[in-house]
Image (cartoon, rainbow, N blue to C red):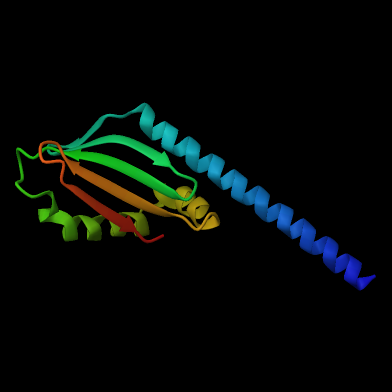
Length: 127
């Protein structure tokens, strides 16, 4: 009897976990679609958000960098990495996304590309 109850508990836990994972993926996909509704979006004088997606595990932001203002998009990489990490660590606006990314063992990835050179830079944010 105890084994049967334990097995039923394990099966119920498995279904709940799958359901949470499915819900998290749905929420993250919808969040990316919401961002895309406003894209392209001029973030500052040299950065434009071109798109966003959730690939099933990672929440990806894609930006184009106007190279009229810099000869090397990596020039600000460390500063950007620190600022983005701080933003995700402290701003409550990201709490729901972070909670759902944890459910799918995901992360946030910022992808930058130079508008003229095509040079790429990627920044991973720890969740």
